Length: 153
Image (cartoon, rainbow, N blue to C red; front, side):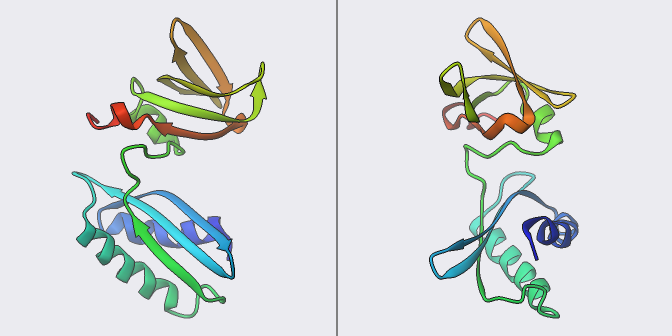
């Protein structure tokens, strides 16, 4: 199973339980595979919520051996500097301070900080000081809330 298949399998379960799958990482780390889920819910996610979701997700994946190799399951909060990946997140966090990292440098620069303006037709708009910058979504390596400003969301 790859990350997209795992996400497709788990997303309905997580949403049914009142959660939101913010990000999923499925990767080999050293000699083991790690499935890392970053979850949120209305009002924030607690340690008890993480334990609950871990039990539910683990049971779902173990049912019928959905993942053939052994792995470590980690469930946690996305944190104050949560990643922005989904279309709905671009609208939800428009007007918030963010940090953006490009896959390849643009004019020698890969990192930008500014205020997210949104996503329109595959282009992300970011107010950087007095300049409105646009970036193709595919060119972005990572976009996160700026944790210094995220506490008020």
